[in-house]
Length: 417
Image 1 (cartoon, rainbow, N blue to C red):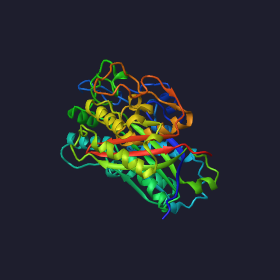
Image 2: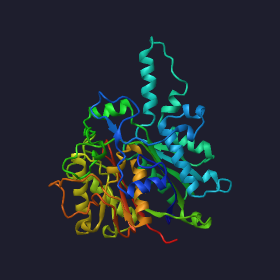
Image 3: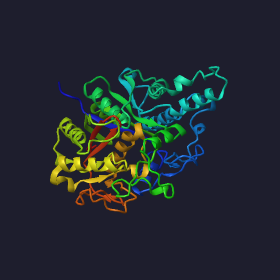
């Protein structure tokens, strides 16, 4: 069976450095940090008092008050980003076969704020179970694609992938395969997360996963830097319209890129720590290259998982050096988490979008906040430090890994219109 070609025809983003694709790209190319003191709650007693929150996002700018109250923030973010992507793709919803349009979405946690607030309200009461009737529908991780499909009448596959921080990357790979196999013409995919809450910050602090550089929050996310001390929690959403190539061509759609392939693997090592030798990461990139049918020396840029953790950054770069060999020094390697923070289940989506935009604009966004060389990192690697670099990017790779040892990797190629 000959696999169908799959392309990207629409993009949408809601991030800590921009509330749409245009703003997001402006933040990326200019190396803007989205990290700042937390405003959602009083974080004075928390070990980490900062995060990458959305800026100037007001739910009632997009939803009426009644509707907004029925949606956890992660679902609001999903609807906003997917609406932008659908509009960007210029899909005529009256002409597409809605039985062949699906929604495959990623969320690592789902409605954490809803769960937190409902439990706190119950604990503050007299023990009588007075829960909001929207508690469960707001909280469950699968509700975001449900809302997207209900809003637009999409009746193809509809579900959520949950693989911690790899969730939206897994969603995109599933979407790729459904279209390649001929089951769908179009799939809305991506991911959203809204874990900047008391429970989220407290939980990740208890794991010693977050940076605690409270005096300089804007520089706290510093991938590959010797002084990195953990990731910065972020929030938001990224959405992509994946479409069968001939379907897109027939309707005259703008094509951003072709999705060449996707790879998955497991570290099978530890609940939170990566394998120190990067074995699982090596395998996921190799699987992705094999699935795409291209050689390692065709890759021009890699948007790394690069969370700014002491162990993870080194393991990933070791794996890149091993898989790409001498060609690794010719690749622009970066971590856009230095600007956006770590969006958990939405990370794969917004970073895939960053890779696609790097191809479109022939500009690789920087890894900001780097000041101190880490002697454990190969100095010959081009980590695109502190300033965006101009270059032709024809093939871009995006890596995303999650707690539990989940690894996902996606390859995109520039396509001639």
